Image 1 (cartoon, rainbow, N blue to C red):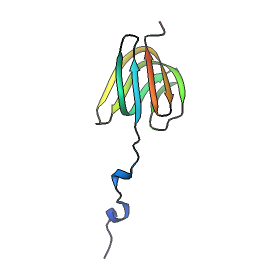
Image 2 (image 1 turned 90 degrees about the vertical axis):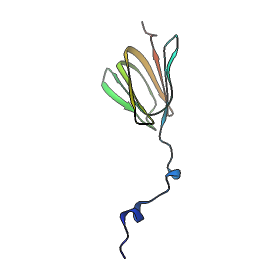
Image 3 (image 1 turned 180 degrees about the vertical axis):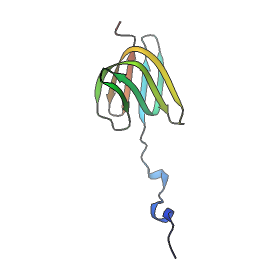
Image 4 (image 1 turned 60 degrees about the vertical axis):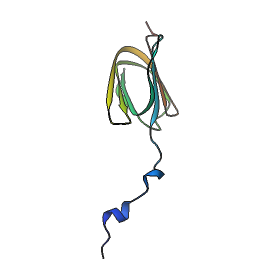
Length: 100
């Protein structure tokens, strides 16, 4: 009897490591977003970039917008003029309104 493809590729989803990142977006006055997300997208002088799980650590000045891909599949966008993003060990922190 032939095995189905599911027999070769089945696995327990509880064994899959969570591959999400923590995201905090804040202004001086308040926190705009604080939670776990699938990815974060923004732009800097070199172009658009995405931050996913296990991204390299870096700091950059960002502009234009912040796109948040949530765990439920939803997408949110925050328009910005300029800010600073810090990516460190699967945590993204965005500081807005501190450069002007």
